[in-house]
Length: 95
Image 1 (cartoon, rainbow, N blue to C red):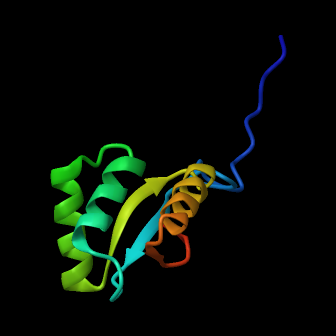
Image 2 (image 1 turned 180 degrees about the vertical axis):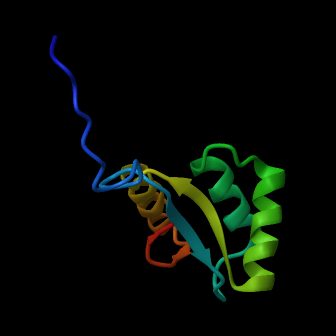
């Protein structure tokens, strides 16, 4: 009878493209609350217009907000869409 030997992992399930990557929007002087809220609601899953306004307020009050986190490929996609819409973006962060 053969026996399967499982080797220890050298990296966790968050390695490579997985893991928690953070998409962060920064406060600026040129985007309106309406534009930020509507853009977030249009582009980020799980953010509706009411949540968009709450996040816009958080960005205004604290200078930034994490608007999405997840796998790297999706984080890059959302980051690019938000930047293309004119929002001021922080660099992607590995969480």
